[in-house]
Length: 358
Image: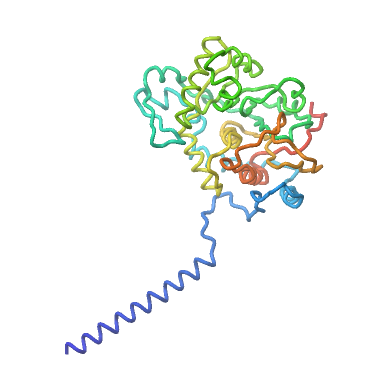
């Protein structure tokens, strides 16, 4: 009797092993033939790989132009769905800027680039924060978001850019000395990377007046500083605030929230973007999509050849300094912005602006 039971048990074990092997094989076949990448609500068929643009070959540019529609039309339903999704994940209107309302006294600020080095919010630091978000409940009908790409040179887009109700610019770009015709001069918000404060103004460790004078073209705009991206950004950002206060500058310095940056990076990862860090351009374009009904992007072309004439372009409209390619995935970001353009959510401008636009 025991021998019969032993044989029966052995048979059952062999059957279980066989079935396990069969289902493992079946699962492997199914998974290898299916796309397991998470799909966003705005998933479209796979686009050409824009990250593989060595030298910006004509074929890559041609593929981009195939997806770029000059006869752009806003798709209101797409815009509303995307804006609602972005706002629900990131809350840019209330959380993009560090305030006393969202960062209480005694709380800890966690650097988005250094998670293990939180900073205690002391009374001195807390008093630097504005009481409420600078955007309040305001929303704008039209917004221009101006990148610094070389495609803006000789574009004649200045008047069209300045015609928007709210204009956002990146990293204290030059607006005078003949650049006005191409990029305009109206500014409501401009970002200021601390690296620029070190390179152009000596980290504000010595003479500070040149910094204040350098901000005059931006008037009373918001100066958005990423003070809490890394710990070494904090001291120079605070010196920038104190300098503007001491010289009674009309400029309004505020700090970009690390919590917002973390949420925004998570959001774009959910959309399929793979990047070490988001570029300033994508950050402010995302913010504009929450604040503005109609968003127009200028100067976001990331390649070294013009999309129409194929003539060489400088990296920026004002110089040819290279971007940090190992940190920012510019072509991949542009691919996502181009998808939003194709879906009628925002509009990407390439090439010249008609002078008749005023």
